[in-house]
Amino acid sequence: MYFSNSKYWDLGAPIAGILLALSFAPFNYAYLALLSLIFLFASWQHVSPGRALLRGYLFGLGLFGIGVSWVYISIHDFGGADLLSSIILTSLFIIIWALFPALCGYFSVKLVPSNADIFRLWAIPFIWVLVEYVRGYLVLNGFPWLQVAYSQLEAPLAGYIPIIGGYGTSFLLAFTASTFVILMFYKKHLVILIAIIAVLWGMGSWLQAVKWTQDVGNPIKASLIQGNISQDQKWKLENRNRILQKYKALTEEHWDSDVIVWPETAVPAFLSEVNESFLLPLRTEAAKSDTDLIISIPIKENLRHEKYNAAITLGKNEGIYRKSHLLPFGEYLPLQPLSGFMLSILDIPLAHFLPGRTDQPLLKAGGYTFITSICYEDAFSDVNIRGLPEAAYLVNVTNDAWFGDSLEPHQHMQIARMRAMETGRFLLRATNTGITAIVSPQGKIINQAPLFETTAISGTIIPMGGMTPYARLGDRVIIGVIGLLLLTLVVYSNICQKVAREYLL
Image (cartoon, rainbow, N blue to C red; front, side, top):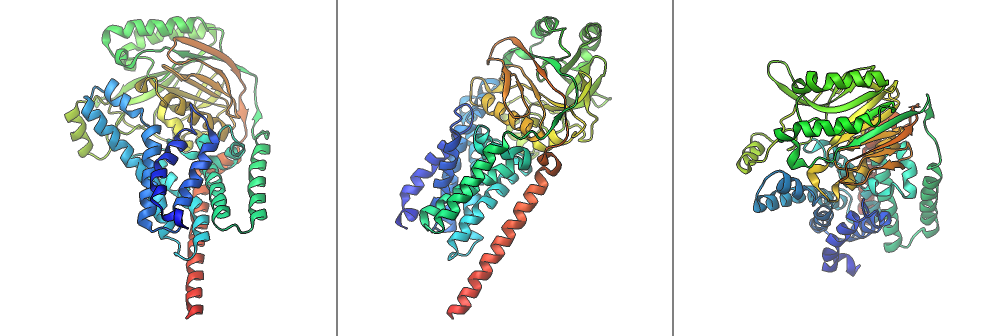
Protein backbone atom coordinates (compact mmCIF):
# COMPACT_ATOMS: atom_id res chain seq x y z
CA MET A 1 0.00 0.00 0.00
CA TYR A 2 2.91 2.30 -0.77
CA PHE A 3 0.86 4.79 -2.74
CA SER A 4 -1.49 5.46 0.17
CA ASN A 5 1.41 6.82 2.18
CA SER A 6 3.17 8.49 -0.74
CA LYS A 7 3.38 12.27 -0.89
CA TYR A 8 2.13 11.99 -4.47
CA TRP A 9 -1.32 11.60 -2.94
CA ASP A 10 -0.80 14.93 -1.18
CA LEU A 11 0.03 16.58 -4.48
CA GLY A 12 -2.92 14.94 -6.19
CA ALA A 13 -5.47 16.03 -3.58
CA PRO A 14 -5.89 19.67 -4.75
CA ILE A 15 -6.01 18.46 -8.37
CA ALA A 16 -8.84 16.10 -7.41
CA GLY A 17 -10.60 19.06 -5.79
CA ILE A 18 -10.30 21.06 -8.99
CA LEU A 19 -11.74 18.11 -10.94
CA LEU A 20 -14.76 18.11 -8.62
CA ALA A 21 -15.24 21.84 -9.27
CA LEU A 22 -15.31 21.05 -13.00
CA SER A 23 -18.20 18.65 -12.49
CA PHE A 24 -20.51 21.58 -11.69
CA ALA A 25 -21.99 24.13 -14.09
CA PRO A 26 -20.97 25.60 -16.45
CA PHE A 27 -18.51 22.76 -17.16
CA ASN A 28 -20.93 19.94 -16.27
CA TYR A 29 -18.42 17.07 -16.41
CA ALA A 30 -20.63 15.06 -14.06
CA TYR A 31 -18.49 11.93 -13.90
CA LEU A 32 -15.45 13.87 -12.75
CA ALA A 33 -17.25 14.10 -9.40
CA LEU A 34 -17.10 10.32 -9.06
CA LEU A 35 -13.46 10.13 -10.14
CA SER A 36 -12.39 12.90 -7.74
CA LEU A 37 -14.15 11.24 -4.79
CA ILE A 38 -12.59 7.87 -5.64
CA PHE A 39 -9.14 9.48 -5.52
CA LEU A 40 -9.89 11.33 -2.29
CA PHE A 41 -11.33 8.33 -0.47
CA ALA A 42 -8.45 6.13 -1.64
CA SER A 43 -5.97 8.70 -0.32
CA TRP A 44 -7.45 8.30 3.16
CA GLN A 45 -6.62 4.60 3.38
CA HIS A 46 -3.80 3.33 5.61
CA VAL A 47 -2.90 6.81 6.86
CA SER A 48 -3.10 8.66 10.17
CA PRO A 49 -6.02 10.96 10.99
CA GLY A 50 -3.69 13.94 10.58
CA ARG A 51 -2.62 12.89 7.09
CA ALA A 52 -6.25 12.30 6.07
CA LEU A 53 -7.12 15.75 7.41
CA LEU A 54 -4.27 17.30 5.37
CA ARG A 55 -5.34 15.60 2.16
CA GLY A 56 -8.95 16.54 2.72
CA TYR A 57 -7.90 20.14 3.29
CA LEU A 58 -5.79 20.26 0.14
CA PHE A 59 -8.73 18.77 -1.74
CA GLY A 60 -10.97 21.50 -0.30
CA LEU A 61 -8.57 24.23 -1.36
CA GLY A 62 -8.70 22.94 -4.94
CA LEU A 63 -12.48 22.60 -4.89
CA PHE A 64 -13.38 25.94 -3.33
CA GLY A 65 -10.40 27.80 -4.76
CA ILE A 66 -11.89 27.29 -8.22
CA GLY A 67 -15.56 26.76 -7.35
CA VAL A 68 -16.18 29.92 -5.31
CA SER A 69 -13.54 32.20 -6.81
CA TRP A 70 -16.43 34.47 -7.83
CA VAL A 71 -16.66 35.87 -4.31
CA TYR A 72 -13.69 38.08 -5.22
CA ILE A 73 -15.81 39.89 -7.84
CA SER A 74 -18.52 40.77 -5.32
CA ILE A 75 -15.99 42.07 -2.79
CA HIS A 76 -13.68 43.95 -5.15
CA ASP A 77 -15.68 44.97 -8.21
CA PHE A 78 -18.98 45.78 -6.52
CA GLY A 79 -18.20 45.87 -2.80
CA GLY A 80 -15.58 48.56 -3.23
CA ALA A 81 -12.79 46.85 -1.29
CA ASP A 82 -9.20 47.43 -2.37
CA LEU A 83 -7.17 44.72 -4.12
CA LEU A 84 -5.29 43.46 -1.06
CA SER A 85 -8.36 43.36 1.17
CA SER A 86 -10.33 41.57 -1.55
CA ILE A 87 -7.64 38.91 -1.93
CA ILE A 88 -7.43 38.42 1.84
CA LEU A 89 -11.20 38.11 2.29
CA THR A 90 -11.58 35.77 -0.69
CA SER A 91 -8.73 33.60 0.59
CA LEU A 92 -10.27 33.53 4.05
CA PHE A 93 -13.60 32.46 2.53
CA ILE A 94 -11.93 29.59 0.67
CA ILE A 95 -9.83 28.57 3.67
CA ILE A 96 -12.90 28.28 5.91
CA TRP A 97 -14.94 26.09 3.58
CA ALA A 98 -11.93 23.91 2.72
CA LEU A 99 -11.98 22.77 6.35
CA PHE A 100 -15.05 20.59 5.74
CA PRO A 101 -13.51 17.98 3.40
CA ALA A 102 -10.60 17.98 5.87
CA LEU A 103 -12.93 17.16 8.75
CA CYS A 104 -14.49 14.39 6.70
CA GLY A 105 -11.05 12.85 6.16
CA TYR A 106 -10.14 13.15 9.83
CA PHE A 107 -13.32 11.55 11.16
CA SER A 108 -13.28 8.85 8.48
CA VAL A 109 -10.00 7.60 9.92
CA LYS A 110 -10.51 8.50 13.57
CA LEU A 111 -13.95 6.99 14.19
CA VAL A 112 -13.22 3.51 12.84
CA PRO A 113 -10.47 1.21 14.25
CA SER A 114 -7.20 1.08 12.36
CA ASN A 115 -7.51 -2.63 11.55
CA ALA A 116 -11.00 -2.24 10.05
CA ASP A 117 -10.19 -0.59 6.73
CA ILE A 118 -13.25 -1.90 4.88
CA PHE A 119 -15.47 -0.52 7.65
CA ARG A 120 -13.72 2.82 7.18
CA LEU A 121 -14.61 2.83 3.52
CA TRP A 122 -18.25 2.00 4.26
CA ALA A 123 -18.31 4.80 6.83
CA ILE A 124 -16.97 7.51 4.51
CA PRO A 125 -20.23 8.15 2.57
CA PHE A 126 -22.17 8.64 5.81
CA ILE A 127 -19.55 11.02 7.21
CA TRP A 128 -19.31 12.90 3.91
CA VAL A 129 -23.03 13.66 3.86
CA LEU A 130 -23.20 14.63 7.54
CA VAL A 131 -20.32 17.07 7.03
CA GLU A 132 -22.08 18.45 3.93
CA TYR A 133 -25.22 18.94 6.01
CA VAL A 134 -23.36 20.79 8.77
CA ARG A 135 -21.81 23.07 6.15
CA GLY A 136 -25.07 23.46 4.28
CA TYR A 137 -27.37 24.29 7.17
CA LEU A 138 -25.58 25.01 10.43
CA VAL A 139 -22.44 27.11 9.83
CA LEU A 140 -22.94 30.84 9.15
CA ASN A 141 -26.60 30.25 8.32
CA GLY A 142 -25.57 27.52 5.88
CA PHE A 143 -23.47 27.39 2.71
CA PRO A 144 -24.64 24.42 0.59
CA TRP A 145 -22.75 25.54 -2.51
CA LEU A 146 -20.87 22.80 -4.41
CA GLN A 147 -22.80 20.03 -2.69
CA VAL A 148 -21.82 17.04 -4.85
CA ALA A 149 -25.40 16.09 -5.76
CA TYR A 150 -25.75 19.26 -7.84
CA SER A 151 -23.17 17.87 -10.25
CA GLN A 152 -25.43 14.92 -11.04
CA LEU A 153 -28.52 16.62 -12.53
CA GLU A 154 -27.74 15.18 -15.98
CA ALA A 155 -26.47 11.81 -14.68
CA PRO A 156 -28.42 8.64 -13.73
CA LEU A 157 -28.39 9.41 -10.01
CA ALA A 158 -30.66 12.40 -10.68
CA GLY A 159 -33.56 9.95 -10.66
CA TYR A 160 -33.23 9.72 -6.86
CA ILE A 161 -33.54 13.48 -6.23
CA PRO A 162 -37.39 13.52 -5.93
CA ILE A 163 -37.13 10.57 -3.52
CA ILE A 164 -34.23 11.37 -1.18
CA GLY A 165 -33.23 14.92 -2.16
CA GLY A 166 -29.77 16.40 -2.51
CA TYR A 167 -28.19 14.90 0.59
CA GLY A 168 -29.50 11.44 -0.15
CA THR A 169 -28.19 11.68 -3.70
CA SER A 170 -24.83 12.90 -2.39
CA PHE A 171 -24.73 9.76 -0.25
CA LEU A 172 -25.32 7.51 -3.27
CA LEU A 173 -22.50 9.19 -5.19
CA ALA A 174 -20.11 8.90 -2.23
CA PHE A 175 -21.23 5.28 -1.69
CA THR A 176 -20.38 4.50 -5.31
CA ALA A 177 -16.93 6.05 -4.90
CA SER A 178 -16.27 4.07 -1.71
CA THR A 179 -17.34 0.85 -3.41
CA PHE A 180 -14.88 1.43 -6.24
CA VAL A 181 -12.09 2.03 -3.70
CA ILE A 182 -12.96 -1.28 -2.03
CA LEU A 183 -12.64 -2.96 -5.41
CA MET A 184 -9.27 -1.26 -5.97
CA PHE A 185 -7.72 -2.07 -2.60
CA TYR A 186 -9.24 -5.39 -1.59
CA LYS A 187 -10.53 -7.04 -4.78
CA LYS A 188 -13.15 -8.95 -2.78
CA HIS A 189 -16.74 -9.70 -3.75
CA LEU A 190 -16.13 -8.17 -7.17
CA VAL A 191 -19.25 -9.54 -8.82
CA ILE A 192 -21.56 -8.56 -5.97
CA LEU A 193 -20.21 -5.03 -5.61
CA ILE A 194 -20.24 -4.35 -9.34
CA ALA A 195 -23.81 -5.67 -9.51
CA ILE A 196 -24.86 -3.35 -6.68
CA ILE A 197 -23.43 -0.31 -8.47
CA ALA A 198 -24.97 -1.34 -11.79
CA VAL A 199 -28.42 -1.77 -10.21
CA LEU A 200 -28.08 1.48 -8.25
CA TRP A 201 -27.22 3.57 -11.30
CA GLY A 202 -29.56 1.68 -13.62
CA MET A 203 -32.45 2.23 -11.22
CA GLY A 204 -31.60 5.93 -11.06
CA SER A 205 -31.80 6.17 -14.83
CA TRP A 206 -35.19 4.41 -14.84
CA LEU A 207 -36.55 6.63 -12.05
CA GLN A 208 -35.98 9.75 -14.15
CA ALA A 209 -39.05 8.79 -16.18
CA VAL A 210 -41.32 8.55 -13.10
CA LYS A 211 -43.79 11.41 -12.61
CA TRP A 212 -44.25 12.02 -8.88
CA THR A 213 -46.78 14.87 -9.07
CA GLN A 214 -49.85 15.51 -11.20
CA ASP A 215 -51.47 18.36 -13.15
CA VAL A 216 -54.16 20.18 -11.17
CA GLY A 217 -55.24 22.99 -13.46
CA ASN A 218 -55.08 24.75 -16.78
CA PRO A 219 -51.76 26.00 -18.21
CA ILE A 220 -50.49 29.39 -17.05
CA LYS A 221 -48.69 31.74 -19.41
CA ALA A 222 -45.77 33.37 -17.62
CA SER A 223 -43.30 36.07 -18.65
CA LEU A 224 -40.02 36.71 -16.85
CA ILE A 225 -38.33 40.11 -17.08
CA GLN A 226 -34.52 40.38 -17.13
CA GLY A 227 -33.65 44.06 -16.69
CA ASN A 228 -29.86 43.64 -16.91
CA ILE A 229 -29.04 46.54 -14.60
CA SER A 230 -25.37 46.74 -13.64
CA GLN A 231 -24.89 46.44 -9.89
CA ASP A 232 -22.73 49.57 -9.70
CA GLN A 233 -25.52 51.60 -11.36
CA LYS A 234 -28.59 50.06 -9.77
CA TRP A 235 -28.85 52.09 -6.58
CA LYS A 236 -27.79 55.50 -7.88
CA LEU A 237 -30.71 57.86 -7.34
CA GLU A 238 -30.29 59.49 -10.74
CA ASN A 239 -30.88 56.10 -12.40
CA ARG A 240 -34.04 55.18 -10.52
CA ASN A 241 -36.61 56.56 -12.93
CA ARG A 242 -34.81 55.13 -15.96
CA ILE A 243 -34.75 51.67 -14.37
CA LEU A 244 -38.41 51.81 -13.41
CA GLN A 245 -39.42 52.87 -16.89
CA LYS A 246 -37.36 50.05 -18.41
CA TYR A 247 -39.21 47.44 -16.34
CA LYS A 248 -42.54 49.09 -17.07
CA ALA A 249 -41.89 49.08 -20.83
CA LEU A 250 -40.80 45.42 -20.80
CA THR A 251 -43.89 44.52 -18.79
CA GLU A 252 -46.29 46.32 -21.11
CA GLU A 253 -45.16 44.06 -23.94
CA HIS A 254 -46.49 41.04 -22.04
CA TRP A 255 -49.91 42.04 -20.67
CA ASP A 256 -51.26 38.93 -22.42
CA SER A 257 -49.50 36.76 -19.83
CA ASP A 258 -51.23 35.43 -16.71
CA VAL A 259 -48.14 36.05 -14.56
CA ILE A 260 -45.21 38.45 -14.99
CA VAL A 261 -42.17 38.13 -12.70
CA TRP A 262 -39.50 40.77 -12.01
CA PRO A 263 -36.09 39.86 -10.50
CA GLU A 264 -34.79 40.47 -6.98
CA THR A 265 -34.98 44.14 -5.89
CA ALA A 266 -35.90 45.10 -9.43
CA VAL A 267 -37.28 48.30 -7.91
CA PRO A 268 -34.24 50.20 -6.52
CA ALA A 269 -36.24 51.94 -3.80
CA PHE A 270 -38.26 51.09 -0.72
CA LEU A 271 -41.93 50.26 -1.20
CA SER A 272 -43.07 53.42 0.58
CA GLU A 273 -41.04 55.60 -1.80
CA VAL A 274 -42.64 54.37 -5.04
CA ASN A 275 -45.98 52.90 -4.03
CA GLU A 276 -48.25 55.79 -5.02
CA SER A 277 -46.22 57.23 -7.88
CA PHE A 278 -45.27 54.00 -9.65
CA LEU A 279 -46.84 50.83 -8.25
CA LEU A 280 -50.46 52.02 -7.98
CA PRO A 281 -50.69 52.91 -11.70
CA LEU A 282 -48.98 49.65 -12.54
CA ARG A 283 -51.48 47.79 -10.37
CA THR A 284 -54.35 49.41 -12.30
CA GLU A 285 -52.87 48.36 -15.65
CA ALA A 286 -52.37 44.82 -14.39
CA ALA A 287 -55.99 44.61 -13.26
CA LYS A 288 -57.23 45.78 -16.66
CA SER A 289 -55.16 43.09 -18.37
CA ASP A 290 -56.14 40.37 -15.89
CA THR A 291 -52.44 39.84 -15.15
CA ASP A 292 -50.71 39.22 -11.84
CA LEU A 293 -47.34 40.85 -11.22
CA ILE A 294 -44.68 39.42 -8.92
CA ILE A 295 -42.28 42.23 -8.04
CA SER A 296 -39.29 42.15 -5.70
CA ILE A 297 -38.74 45.31 -3.67
CA PRO A 298 -37.20 46.17 -0.28
CA ILE A 299 -39.60 47.40 2.38
CA LYS A 300 -39.41 49.39 5.61
CA GLU A 301 -41.89 48.77 8.39
CA ASN A 302 -43.01 50.54 11.59
CA LEU A 303 -41.34 53.40 13.42
CA ARG A 304 -38.09 51.49 13.87
CA HIS A 305 -37.74 51.26 10.09
CA GLU A 306 -37.16 47.53 10.09
CA LYS A 307 -35.95 46.55 6.62
CA TYR A 308 -36.83 43.40 4.70
CA ASN A 309 -35.87 41.99 1.33
CA ALA A 310 -39.33 41.24 -0.04
CA ALA A 311 -41.51 40.19 -2.96
CA ILE A 312 -45.03 41.49 -3.53
CA THR A 313 -47.91 40.50 -5.79
CA LEU A 314 -50.00 43.06 -7.64
CA GLY A 315 -53.25 42.01 -9.28
CA LYS A 316 -56.28 39.99 -8.24
CA ASN A 317 -54.52 38.68 -5.12
CA GLU A 318 -52.05 40.97 -3.37
CA GLY A 319 -49.58 40.02 -0.68
CA ILE A 320 -46.04 40.36 0.64
CA TYR A 321 -43.35 37.77 1.24
CA ARG A 322 -40.39 38.76 3.41
CA LYS A 323 -37.18 36.82 2.83
CA SER A 324 -36.60 34.48 5.75
CA HIS A 325 -33.19 32.91 5.04
CA LEU A 326 -30.74 35.78 4.74
CA LEU A 327 -27.30 35.87 3.15
CA PRO A 328 -24.57 36.30 5.79
CA PHE A 329 -22.28 39.32 5.23
CA GLY A 330 -24.55 40.46 2.38
CA GLU A 331 -27.88 41.00 4.17
CA TYR A 332 -26.86 40.72 7.80
CA LEU A 333 -23.68 40.39 9.88
CA PRO A 334 -23.03 37.16 11.78
CA LEU A 335 -20.29 36.79 14.40
CA GLN A 336 -20.90 40.25 15.82
CA PRO A 337 -19.15 42.43 16.82
CA LEU A 338 -16.03 41.02 15.10
CA SER A 339 -17.42 40.90 11.56
CA GLY A 340 -18.96 44.37 11.82
CA PHE A 341 -15.66 45.83 13.01
CA MET A 342 -13.68 44.22 10.18
CA LEU A 343 -16.08 45.20 7.40
CA SER A 344 -16.48 48.75 8.70
CA ILE A 345 -12.72 49.19 8.30
CA LEU A 346 -13.01 48.00 4.70
CA ASP A 347 -16.05 50.24 4.11
CA ILE A 348 -18.05 47.52 2.31
CA PRO A 349 -21.75 48.46 2.01
CA LEU A 350 -24.29 46.09 3.57
CA ALA A 351 -28.07 45.97 3.52
CA HIS A 352 -28.77 45.05 7.19
CA PHE A 353 -32.07 43.27 6.52
CA LEU A 354 -34.15 41.39 9.08
CA PRO A 355 -35.43 37.86 8.38
CA GLY A 356 -39.11 37.30 7.73
CA ARG A 357 -41.12 34.67 9.57
CA THR A 358 -40.99 31.07 8.36
CA ASP A 359 -44.79 30.65 8.59
CA GLN A 360 -45.79 33.38 6.14
CA PRO A 361 -48.88 32.70 3.99
CA LEU A 362 -48.23 31.71 0.39
CA LEU A 363 -48.56 34.33 -2.32
CA LYS A 364 -50.97 33.78 -5.20
CA ALA A 365 -50.70 34.63 -8.90
CA GLY A 366 -52.27 33.25 -12.04
CA GLY A 367 -55.02 31.73 -9.93
CA TYR A 368 -52.71 29.48 -7.87
CA THR A 369 -50.54 29.79 -4.79
CA PHE A 370 -46.78 29.44 -5.20
CA ILE A 371 -43.64 29.11 -3.09
CA THR A 372 -41.45 32.22 -3.13
CA SER A 373 -37.69 32.19 -2.70
CA ILE A 374 -35.48 35.25 -2.96
CA CYS A 375 -31.98 34.72 -4.34
CA TYR A 376 -29.92 32.66 -1.86
CA GLU A 377 -33.04 30.98 -0.47
CA ASP A 378 -33.25 28.67 -3.47
CA ALA A 379 -30.13 26.91 -2.16
CA PHE A 380 -32.11 25.57 0.81
CA SER A 381 -34.55 22.73 0.27
CA ASP A 382 -36.51 23.38 3.45
CA VAL A 383 -37.54 26.85 2.24
CA ASN A 384 -38.87 25.35 -0.98
CA ILE A 385 -40.93 22.48 0.47
CA ARG A 386 -42.44 24.52 3.29
CA GLY A 387 -45.60 25.40 1.33
CA LEU A 388 -46.34 21.95 -0.07
CA PRO A 389 -48.67 20.45 -1.13
CA GLU A 390 -50.71 23.68 -1.37
CA ALA A 391 -48.32 25.48 -3.72
CA ALA A 392 -48.77 24.73 -7.42
CA TYR A 393 -45.42 26.08 -8.65
CA LEU A 394 -42.19 27.77 -7.53
CA VAL A 395 -40.97 31.33 -8.08
CA ASN A 396 -37.40 32.44 -7.50
CA VAL A 397 -36.24 36.04 -7.91
CA THR A 398 -32.50 36.59 -7.98
CA ASN A 399 -29.82 39.21 -8.57
CA ASP A 400 -26.52 37.62 -9.56
CA ALA A 401 -25.15 40.91 -10.92
CA TRP A 402 -22.90 40.93 -7.82
CA PHE A 403 -20.78 38.19 -9.40
CA GLY A 404 -20.35 39.43 -12.95
CA ASP A 405 -19.41 37.04 -15.74
CA SER A 406 -18.22 34.24 -13.45
CA LEU A 407 -19.08 30.66 -12.55
CA GLU A 408 -21.65 31.77 -9.98
CA PRO A 409 -24.73 32.44 -12.20
CA HIS A 410 -24.33 29.00 -13.80
CA GLN A 411 -23.88 27.24 -10.46
CA HIS A 412 -26.86 29.12 -9.03
CA MET A 413 -29.07 28.04 -11.95
CA GLN A 414 -28.01 24.44 -11.36
CA ILE A 415 -28.99 24.72 -7.70
CA ALA A 416 -32.39 26.20 -8.59
CA ARG A 417 -33.11 23.32 -10.98
CA MET A 418 -32.79 20.83 -8.14
CA ARG A 419 -35.56 22.60 -6.22
CA ALA A 420 -37.92 21.94 -9.13
CA MET A 421 -36.91 18.25 -9.14
CA GLU A 422 -37.31 17.86 -5.38
CA THR A 423 -40.80 19.36 -5.36
CA GLY A 424 -42.13 18.12 -8.70
CA ARG A 425 -43.11 21.69 -9.61
CA PHE A 426 -42.43 24.08 -12.45
CA LEU A 427 -40.05 26.88 -11.53
CA LEU A 428 -40.20 30.49 -12.73
CA ARG A 429 -36.80 32.09 -12.14
CA ALA A 430 -36.38 35.80 -12.91
CA THR A 431 -32.91 37.30 -12.51
CA ASN A 432 -31.44 40.75 -13.06
CA THR A 433 -28.52 39.84 -15.35
CA GLY A 434 -29.16 36.10 -15.84
CA ILE A 435 -29.72 33.26 -15.79
CA THR A 436 -33.49 33.80 -16.18
CA ALA A 437 -35.30 30.56 -17.00
CA ILE A 438 -38.45 28.45 -16.88
CA VAL A 439 -37.74 24.97 -15.49
CA SER A 440 -39.83 21.81 -15.69
CA PRO A 441 -40.59 19.51 -12.71
CA GLN A 442 -37.87 17.21 -14.08
CA GLY A 443 -35.29 20.00 -13.79
CA LYS A 444 -35.10 20.61 -17.54
CA ILE A 445 -34.79 24.19 -18.81
CA ILE A 446 -37.78 24.97 -21.03
CA ASN A 447 -36.77 28.51 -21.93
CA GLN A 448 -33.74 30.52 -20.92
CA ALA A 449 -32.54 34.10 -21.41
CA PRO A 450 -28.90 34.80 -22.29
CA LEU A 451 -26.62 36.39 -19.72
CA PHE A 452 -26.24 40.19 -19.63
CA GLU A 453 -29.03 40.96 -22.05
CA THR A 454 -32.10 43.13 -21.45
CA THR A 455 -34.94 40.84 -22.43
CA ALA A 456 -38.06 38.97 -21.40
CA ILE A 457 -38.89 35.31 -21.95
CA SER A 458 -42.29 33.65 -21.94
CA GLY A 459 -43.56 30.13 -21.62
CA THR A 460 -46.34 27.96 -20.30
CA ILE A 461 -46.31 26.11 -17.01
CA ILE A 462 -48.85 23.73 -15.52
CA PRO A 463 -50.03 23.95 -11.89
CA MET A 464 -48.94 20.77 -10.09
CA GLY A 465 -50.34 18.96 -7.08
CA GLY A 466 -49.26 16.09 -4.88
CA MET A 467 -46.03 15.45 -3.04
CA THR A 468 -42.76 13.81 -4.03
CA PRO A 469 -41.38 11.31 -1.49
CA TYR A 470 -38.64 13.80 -0.66
CA ALA A 471 -41.13 16.61 0.00
CA ARG A 472 -42.83 14.36 2.56
CA LEU A 473 -39.56 13.36 4.25
CA GLY A 474 -37.41 16.48 4.12
CA ASP A 475 -33.70 16.62 4.90
CA ARG A 476 -33.98 16.04 8.63
CA VAL A 477 -35.41 12.55 8.31
CA ILE A 478 -32.83 11.56 5.71
CA ILE A 479 -29.95 13.00 7.73
CA GLY A 480 -31.31 11.31 10.87
CA VAL A 481 -31.29 7.91 9.17
CA ILE A 482 -27.76 8.48 7.82
CA GLY A 483 -26.54 9.51 11.28
CA LEU A 484 -28.12 6.46 12.91
CA LEU A 485 -26.59 4.10 10.35
CA LEU A 486 -23.17 5.68 10.84
CA LEU A 487 -23.43 5.25 14.61
CA THR A 488 -24.37 1.61 14.15
CA LEU A 489 -21.44 1.04 11.80
CA VAL A 490 -18.94 2.71 14.14
CA VAL A 491 -20.17 0.79 17.20
CA TYR A 492 -20.16 -2.51 15.30
CA SER A 493 -16.64 -2.01 13.94
CA ASN A 494 -15.30 -1.18 17.41
CA ILE A 495 -16.98 -4.25 18.87
CA CYS A 496 -15.42 -6.40 16.15
CA GLN A 497 -12.00 -4.93 16.94
CA LYS A 498 -12.43 -5.62 20.65
CA VAL A 499 -13.51 -9.21 20.04
CA ALA A 500 -10.60 -9.77 17.66
CA ARG A 501 -8.11 -8.37 20.21
CA GLU A 502 -9.45 -10.60 22.99
CA TYR A 503 -9.37 -13.63 20.69
CA LEU A 504 -5.71 -12.98 19.85
CA LEU A 505 -4.85 -12.65 23.50
